[in-house]
Image (cartoon, rainbow, N blue to C red; front, side, top):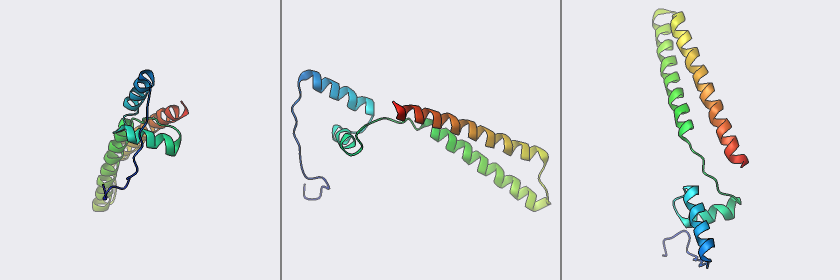
Length: 114
């Protein structure tokens, strides 16, 4: 235990009902341990789970966008111009990213307000 960053232990007693409630809340939080759940409560005063799947989708769309923009820039540099179709594709991807980003921010805001 000498190498542990947290070397002070704490022991608590619960009624059966309290412990069942505690267990359910730890599971719902999706935190890796009961200790982490308690730390979050102490430090932040609340614990909530945020699903980052929407953010991963936004990151994927942003990656597509940057790849397409790089291709358009390469084409423009090599032949002096980019086609109207290429610019429309880039604009569509940017719009898709904004739609996904707005959805994600709405979900995140709702989860924080609970």
